[in-house]
Amino acid sequence: MTEEPREGLRERKKRLTRETLAANAERMFRERGFDQVTVAEVAGASDVSVKTLFVYFDSKEDLVFADEYSLLDRIEQRLADRPAGTSPAEAVRRLAHELIDGTLPGDDAEGIVAFARLIGENPALHSRLQLMWERYEQRLAATLAAEAGGSPFDPATRAAAALLITPFRVLTSSDVRGRIPDDGAATWIDACFSLIEKGLPG
Image (cartoon, rainbow, N blue to C red; front, side, top):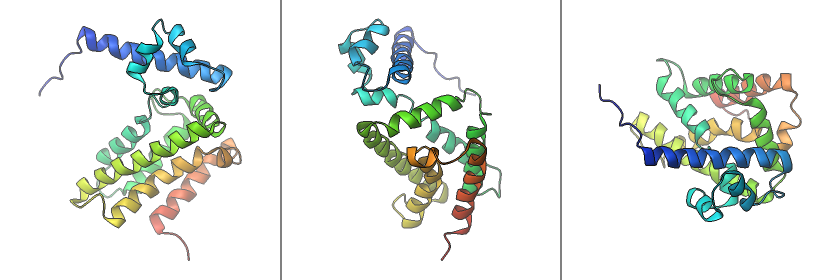
């Protein structure tokens, strides 16, 4: 078994700096709102210059999306680890339940709600979120295509990728999230994935 290379001191310092910037930005955005916090304040709270901050993040909006691929990584891992006979939709449905139940290690249900609220209040962040979902769809289509030995541009593959992401995409939207009671999220998730499995009515 090949061991992964150990993290060097320089790489560790860079990783910690990025994590510190992201953590401080998340805390400040939650406390005061995205528009009320400047990048200079985030940099100052992290003991770095604004110039250094932009080495790690291309924009202020990117600070909000520091861990934007964490959900996609989890989805892809569940697809890879699913037992024989388990459909992609069922594997992702189980993940969705664990997310809303807060049973995943390191999961932050409060953070997910705050993230959705923050996005819904800011047009620039909403546009950035749409870009994130598009990237999810592209990468997930490539994953499904590799599994099936097909093309990520095949209509069925691309549609499947979009459908698997849709429940997360809609559930985190401000207009839907505010209308689903806390004890109704699981039922809502099941209804979405049931449609994905069986096909749309009509």
